[in-house]
Image (cartoon, rainbow, N blue to C red; front, side):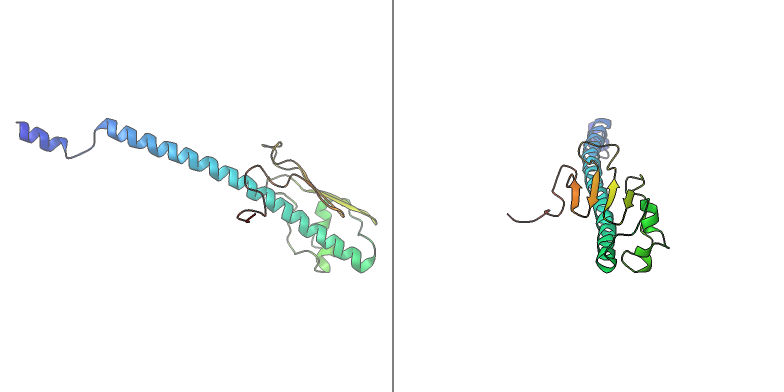
Length: 156
């Protein structure tokens, strides 16, 4: 009876061993998911900066050609297919009027200036606050806390 009992014992895992293995997997998955969310938030913030940069550079190029910025009352009008920025190929067709955080971009321009704005991450306003672009450049956080945006991997 003893040899048979020993053989059955080596054929599978005990309930305790399975629970320990499942706990280890759960801890690793939790850590991985939190890192995924952090990097996803950074990517969304950088995408919003890039979108505002593209439209801002289009407005700057328009200014160089016409000696004035076009009059727009909203960001939607700037990226619309009938916009002079799109018609003159200063920005790409199909630019989204919604930021990566599912909020509308804000923007306006007049003959002498413009302002483009992304409200930032509504779920994390301390680390990913508003981004504002004017003819003078950006005034905003650079990226959510973590690795700096653009300097990831740069040697100092």
